[in-house]
Image 1 (cartoon, rainbow, N blue to C red):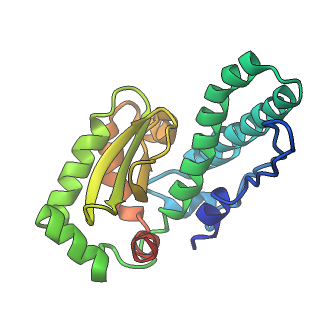
Image 2 (image 1 turned 30 degrees about the horizontal axis):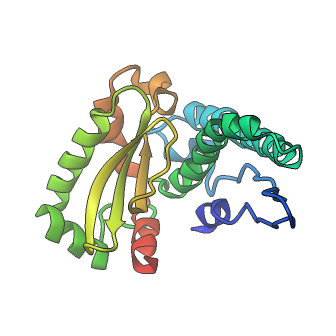
Length: 221
């Protein structure tokens, strides 16, 4: 179940060219979902999932590949200004690709797997937040509190050996923690079904969280 997210972090390979900062990069591709578009209904509609995957995620893939190609050409031409200009496009679209690859595997049809965390993940959540319900409450508050567009995360702080809730803006990936669970709170993830009521979307999404993949990421981290 982790194949999509794993491939996202391995899609770019770097081959230095002697005497310059140029690099040869492989393209990223849009992954297939591990379930049908309508498999998460009634909590997330099939229409939302199809548009989100085919349109939004695919746009990040295409724009990232285009920006990477332009960046490679700017390296070859030794155009420093152009290299700097392209960094935002690479970060935004590359982050959008990585974040969505993880997001798709964070979801599963209701009834598939455990409805709540179990094992070491449950123990870690209870240790940090007191209970799963309190964790949900704090996570929802962070997600609803994101101004504009962004993501809400549960991550592992390896140095402190604890779980932490975090948010990122736009398509910024989670870099200071090891991501375990990410929820997209851009309006395109829920507007067709929940309009502008993000709290309703957050309450519904807990029904289709794939806790098995979250637990696997924790064990591997």
